[in-house]
Length: 540
Image (cartoon, rainbow, N blue to C red; front, side, top):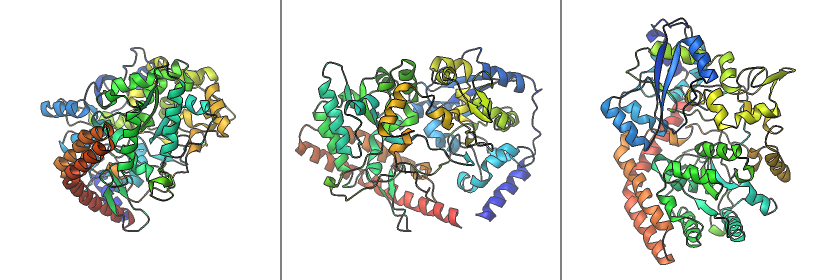
């Protein structure tokens, strides 16, 4: 690995022949595409004004509207490339189409020390087999200590008021979870609650297809389960296995009780967010970041009791799989191939690199993550703190559009963990802020459990496997088979869930397993080989 790292860095230094622009460059407008829906910042946004004044850069931001893969496909066919290109969860399409430049042609220890030091220790796992890097991870690179206040990834979620209504029970298993939802909805027949929602649209269908691995006690490896204890890293698809059927049979039971709305299988992401924002969806499986706009809407409306808490559910022993220990939280995972790439159409790649280099400075990271000292936070005895009003502002969606550069910050390289002086890089991770300045409802809710943070519901993060997380593996070499593997799930799993009888469920499940079998075999063999390749690369 050391030889590989040295080779990569040497190549980057040889290729880094550009002289970087300075803040006095002519003003330019940078076109940006974000592979997620979002809201336009205000024209007088104070952080974007600061960036414009210091770097001469304005942003013209396009947010995703509609289907991600269709949108990217159209842009690729027409070669309609923005300067900064975030392909969201389909960024591999941009890479494989040759739409992005190799960033290592512009990064070196001498000219871009912030970027160089940010990625140097991770390069062996970030670059492709040709030693190229097209996207610097937008999340997952921690400085000093990793902070785990909450589950930011996958989990089963439930409204906090439901747990409060049942006198704050410890819900550990799938059966306990749905039993509670059923009882709560039955006790509130006139309030229009929807028991459980399932988002199935586009790449976000992970809400439908990914829960089984977690019920079996594994963190997020995408569409496979990997045995990390045997030493051989045996890899298999889980969706077609005997241990997957009980989950969908449980959803079928819940559906036939009227707790799952049939429209859940066809609703768009925007419709899903609107439902969650209404406070009427009791529970769902999702990832925290995926419904952040709904959380913000509920908080802005003061509906804290309708916000969600993540629960690490597993199968109980009645399912016949033994005692399962939950392990939802993983060690720090660099968000490989996620974030901004610079397109081949960009006329000023050096200025984009220079922008990222400067935004990674301590000064700019504080501005991007905390705001302006004396205005958005204050410092006392060396600790970065917020008043209640300042903290409340950060939860207000309208305020953020005028006072934060969230659209750029979310996709750009960033520092996480702690600063050298012990302050957290993220304002929300600062211990003094995290508990003391949350809503009174949330403080009372956690206190009822004897907790200080939502992560206390979970086991501590496990050690990250040497292959990272398998969802990061690029499946382009088996693109057709992989697409069929996913499409069969999208087609059949709703049918299984909506089966009218046990006999129909069994028949639908058998048909599903039979149809997916050849694609699952291709997926398993490919992923097994790639996992072993990554393990060897990381350990040699």
